[in-house]
Image (cartoon, rainbow, N blue to C red; front, side, top):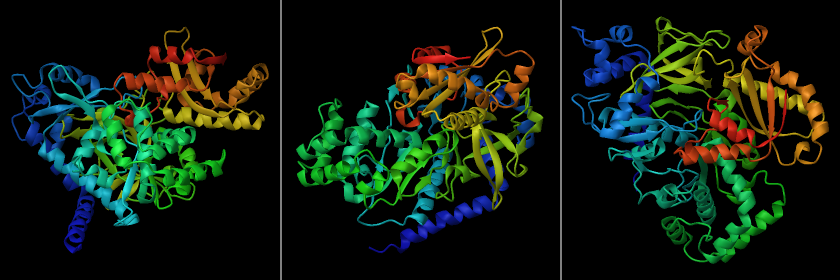
Length: 586
């Protein structure tokens, strides 16, 4: 088959990336012009533009339309979820409403609804972004004709129905659709059939992904998940369930624990009958490993060339465990996609999390940048400090503000990035953290992660066998004075779990200063003012944070989009964690 036309088409797509980034400001203004020309008459914008008597340019738009957050859209979205598009005039977009996305719901454990519309402008921009993502990966890992399947640990999640009758689904389902892969084509690209992706139980889906991945043992080119945590969960399940997986392969059908009938039948068909030789081969590899599962990805899947996931931000803490399972297989980075829009492209996917940078897409949304100061006591950034894509400064941090094709206008995305440089004329950014939700917050994700790292080092220095596996914080503003609570889950083999609690508590108290001393400038200022009581550290038994995962899934968060919260803002979540406390230390 002649590959020349396809290669020429791919080269044209890459040339478009070069042109867009070389003329990033022009394409940004064109993107904003397209959005406003299309949606200027929607009810949300008319609140601010009704007295405008001339063309709406970028400067006028920024001067008249204020910065916004999700709360500014909640009433509009709730109305659409209840009544669909029944209204005298369009609320957020003139395009037909197709349904709603779930956000990840990280902080509150309850996902937000993000409306999505049948917008050709948005679809074209998203599809182009996905093409760029695919072609960048292809540069590093050219397609192989016979070894070409991806073991993708992906869970589309439940597709529910809003009161208006429209679907509510994860954004990942939409991205799958935008990638132009039909259900019939999924088995040609991925190890698992489509029924596994849309299954009804996350752990059962992961198990079935593993089973299909083992059935296609010699055909797996890449292993992927949206986030590094998803890969850790998958490999951990492989460690605990490998005997059952081998048994299922030998019989030719999945365990009866898999209760989703459609998924069971599809996986049985994928297995293609009993596979005793393959089962014995895998069993021998796993038995030879003993308790050492380092490098299992390469030991099992001998032809795999890469493992792909997002490992930046709060997912960085899981990267070492992914590397442990990966062994010599490179762990490559993902791209920067949000529920509201596509944000950035990772041009060098081979970089580790600490050096990963994203080139902002000049065509997927209109970007503005709100300066962010980590040590600002007020966090009261104001709109007249805004910068556009061409005027940001290298080395400085900003909160991203987006105007999208999908009905968000000057919307604070909640992500803080640092400008590392420019690719052509488009900024290259490092994801730093989620922004504080309110001026009253005294701790950032970055502060907490740094403090926990130092706490772990201090524990090791005290010769304590305590491994921290998960953590979060909560500012109790109802206490007088206010009190910061830090929750730390420890590993099963920790000293705490072996009748050494009294000794462990004494040592922990001596290590608390390393934790408290790293909690950031805002915390220290509040402490000096006397507005904070003593820090309280809760040591949690293993599995405590799994309960938060279960709460999030029950509330509608798709398993693939789940991100363990670091800054808690919900008393109900805190109550769940406190029930799993082994002890607390003031």
